[in-house]
Each structure stands twice: as structure tokens, then as C-alpha cells.
Amino acid sequence: MNRLTTHHAAKKTQLRYPCRVCSQECSYEEESIQCDGCQCWLHQHCIRMMLTQYVEYSQKPSLQFFCLRCDCDSDGHYNFRASLERIACLALDVSHMRDQAETENRLLALYGITLPPLSAPYARDVVVDRPSLSLLQRHSQWLLKQYVPAAVGADGNCLFRAMSLALYGHDGLYDHLRLLTTTEVLLQPSLYDSTSAEYYAPYTADDRLMLYTYDNFVKETVKDGAYSDMLTVLALSSVCIRLKCTGRRGCASFGTIVEPGKAHMEKKHSTYQGS
Ligand SMILES: [Zn+2]
Ligand SMILES: [Zn+2]
Image 1 (tube, protein in one colour):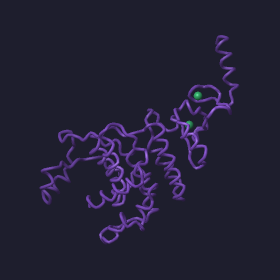
Image 2 (tube, helix red, strand yellow):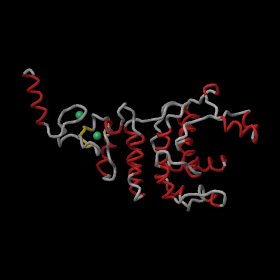
Image 3 (cartoon, helix red, strand yellow):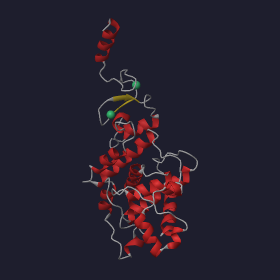
Image 4 (cartoon, helix red, strand yellow):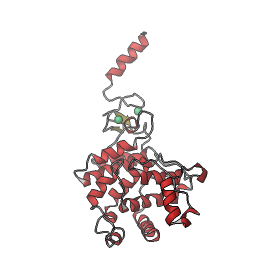
């Protein structure tokens, strides 16, 4: 070890709060934030956090912050399942789950984690689901003139995998879609609980459907591999309408919350047109 290296190492150990990005000290004079995962410190400018975002973190203690190292898996990909697990582990109190959903939405926006531009699969690339094909041939042949029944992974995430396949040509974005659906349900509670005249009421009148209570619905939606019901379809449809509105122009930020009024109208449209 040469002298320079020794000196550098000694200097480094003197730092009390070294920034994980630039390795310089996070002093009291500089806007800095601590990761709630690994407890490291980072300069606001080193993570390209806008000052308005920084102020929001400062003013809202319920918001958690996670550095990219804590938010990514070992391959460097954003870890959506970890986000879902952070919400799921608060299942004893839905209000805490809601706070965490806000945290996860802000992290997606901060790191610019977006879905890719929409890219529907070609029929020739789809693996045909044989049981569905034979059912449709017997009962709804007209559907086969327009659609191909596609096979997706059968791990309890099939609704999200199917939507990922339809929108992006492969089913691998299911965990991102599940996270967006979970935050939609948690951040728009009035639409998905039993008092909702728009969403819930038309389905309670149908005695062939069994709907979860809001709390149980949220606790199921957040679980990787948990099966979906009608409310999940409605929540995912809201997410997808937002994607379709913005996706054709390229990579929009899907973590961003749309204006409440606009989302409301879009949801209404999807419910009554689609059902
Ligand atoms: Zn720094
Ligand atoms: Zn961290």
C-alpha cells in the first residue's frame, strides 16, 4: 500500500456520514437523506432528488426513503417484489399500508421507474393455451376469429402476467403491474370499499360473485401469487387506462398519481363499458 492510499483510507474513516454516491461527507449544511434500509446517507443532489421532493420527505415522517442499492435486486433490476413485501408486512393496519404505498409510489417517481412503451405481441409469438382453445371452440367460436388464447405462467399472478403479455409482448412485468394495482387500491380507498356506488355496488347485486371486504382485498392484492377477483380486475383496468393514455407517447411515469377527477371519469368509463 502506498502512502497516498494509506492517507486516503485514513481520511475516509474520519467521515461520519459519507455519501454512498460521491463518498464525501454529508454535512449539516447540505441537504442529505438517510436510507431506511441500509441507513447510509446520500446528498440530495447526488440522487437527483428535486428540492420539492426533498422538502416533502422532510415534512412527512411517514414517508420512507430507500437508496437504489436497497431498491434493486442482485442483478441491478428494480425489486418490485421487495416493494410489495414492504407494504404486505404492514398488513395489521391498512392505514400503515397506505403510507407505505405512498412511499413506494414516490420511489418509482424519484428513480424514474416506468413501464416500457406499449408493444402488443404478434399472434405468431404467442404460446396458445390448449385447454382455453378447446373450450372456446366448443362454446364461443366467434372469439377465435379475433383473439388467440395465450398461455402465461400459472403461479397465481396470471391476471397480471396476462396483462403484461397483452401490453408489452411478454409476461415478465407482472410484478410491476401488481405493485401499481396495489398502490391504486390503497390510495383510492373510496372506490374499492363496500360504500363505493361506482365500483362495488354493481357487483354486490350479483349473487354469483363473492367480493372481499376492502381490508381483505388489499391484503390479498399485495401478496405475490395471490389470486385475483373482480375488484382486482377493476383496479388493474384503472392502471391500464392510465398506461394506454400515456404509453403511446413513450415512457411516461406510471408511478405518478393522475389528477383525481380525471382518474374518476376514466374508471367510470372502464366499469360500465367493459362490464
Ligand atoms: Zn454525494
Ligand atoms: Zn440503502
